Amino acid sequence: MAEEVKTRYSDEELAEFKAIIDEMLEKARAEYETLRHVIMHNGSNDIEDTSPSFKTVEDDGANQLSKEEASQLAQRQYKFIQNLEAALVRIENKTYGICRETGKLIPKERLRLVPHATLTVEAKEKLAKSGRK
Image (cartoon, rainbow, N blue to C red; front, side, top):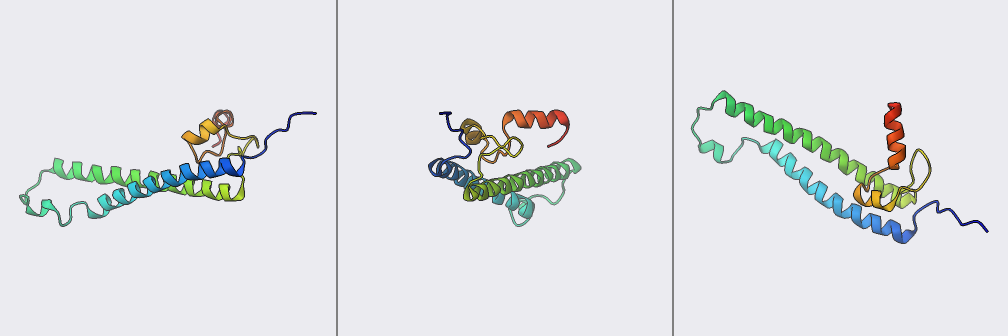
């Protein structure tokens, strides 16, 4: 009798991944809100109001750069949150951890490090070589 090939993770395994994702999601949302706060409140009603009214061009440039960086980080964090939320949907559908290219299970070690992964490392490398994502 041939050994049965595992086609999906068990409910217990899915619950473990859900706990990991929930924890990451909580941290990611908090970081996103912090970044949004930095972007929205940069330069308003804080100690800058009491600072001398003259500023050098460099100060404004540095301030703008940090706001732009915060905006880019917020965008990346938002995408990360969306990916984690999509992973939770896959857990509910019991399709979590299945490579979207090969149909094989993504190793647990990879999912613990990148819980929103939808590809095995091999499939990801193959797609990168072919120019697809």
